[in-house]
Image (cartoon, rainbow, N blue to C red):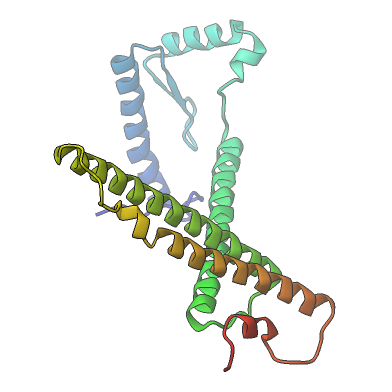
Length: 230
């Protein structure tokens, strides 16, 4: 069971705050010790508790002083390269949350677009789509058509190879045999898909004309050429 995230804010109750400090300080010092041993690095911890006259130091005041002097002898740029205070930590965390929010908002907008486009394709009613959504729908259809073309070409090539292998196994005598792709509906399917693409392009053009210069008439005058009433 996953643990719930804790709010980073001051604990109001004095007793609870002291208990939390004692518990977390012990855990922090243990982590510093583990880091020093497991990774063979110099590490120290200095913790000032409220009301305490002197800080708690690990591993010892002498070792901590040696490490701090070593830090001070480094160039200033190297000292601050990976240094972080509470303000910087909170700012970094806030930036991550803002980025996540923007990403989620973008995904929500894209999902809303897709739902509207799928609904328009299902019902055949494109009146509720704006120009941007109509263009997105056209681009989506183009990508789907490209995948379909690639799949049809792959199937056709597979049929060609199978036919050639079969002819070779028959002794090379392929006279009188029609290759399977000669009567294959690939080209017919390609024409149908191309017609659908032309329909979407016409829809976008019609929507643009309706926006720029409204004209009386049927709600979808461009549909008549593709779905005649007679």
